[in-house]
Length: 102
Image 1: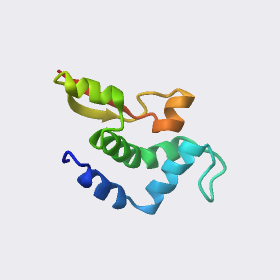
Image 2: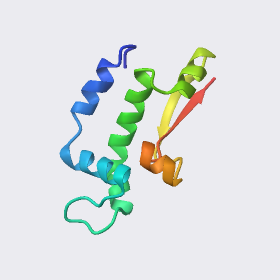
Image 3: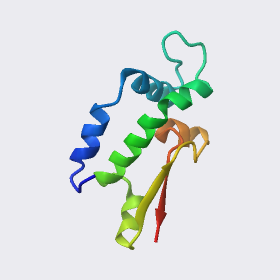
């Protein structure tokens, strides 16, 4: 990705409709069309979307915590899917957690 986030925005635009629906279902708690619950399959189907969103969020400087880590020499190592399974973590970031290395 680049510093102005263009690559990340392009990646978001490339997500398929099923992934986008799964991301929306996790964020809102409302099951996808044709589903009765937001369950394991929804989290699985949304993984790529949440990781893409997390990378975009970091790339465009929207995460103050990530900005602090980067300013201290941290480098993004990976986005961990369902690393934060609290209600807040799931609805705000699909459970995605950024792992930095120093």
